[in-house]
Image 1: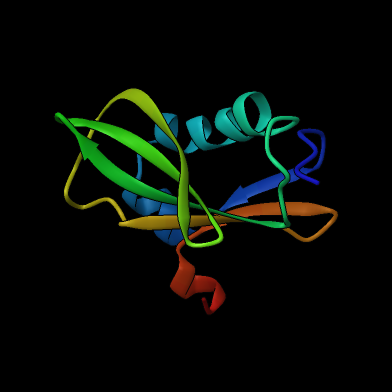
Image 2: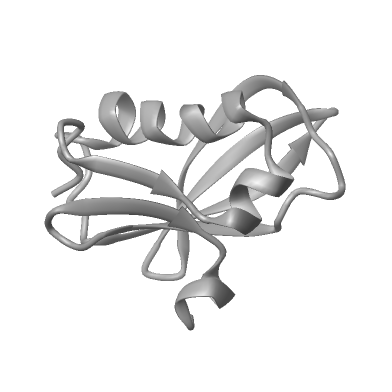
Length: 102
């Protein structure tokens, strides 16, 4: 699950609303902070929050906040409030919940 060697994508909504670095940071968090630490399903949820002007990612599992990952990137009110990362087994995508009917 979430093998970094598989194809990875971001939806149009994500690409048009988040800077590339913030998108890349999602993959970094999955590969370096979540893998091997948490039991992951094929659907990961993050809330994007304003942490004193910087973007933080709240990792949500089972409707509960499990961990927060800070970033050096400035927060913008135009960012989606949450995003999901889905692994189909051979490709992965970052999208908003509404884009994958959640």
